Length: 152
Image (tube, rainbow, N blue to C red; front, side):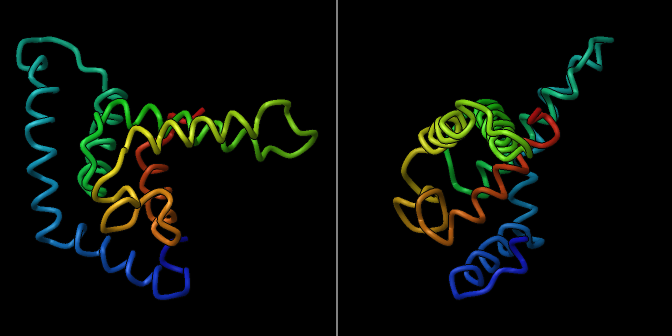
């Protein structure tokens, strides 16, 4: 787990994540959640339907984008994270290795990195992100959170 890791980089990641999840950080995240929830739940006011799985994906993707400072589309990020998580799991299943599982996991991880792009939280600027060594751990955990239970 992220919070059981050692080293200065991991401590810096924990501090950075703690700021994002502090009372002030959660208040900033609410500014992301509220408009999304108002927009996505509006059909209910008129007897319409809401796909809660899609809403949960977009919400998770929005939170990850906000925490990483990414301008990626939250739904695309959640979808890419789900695909990367599923490919990663398939590449680690017990038994005989599945042909193509490792390359598929690498391709989906790369798609995720490209989707996040350079900038804050990407490892190409300040802050943790893919390719930044210790920051990769926090990013991978946040992306697994975006993937949620839909990584199958």
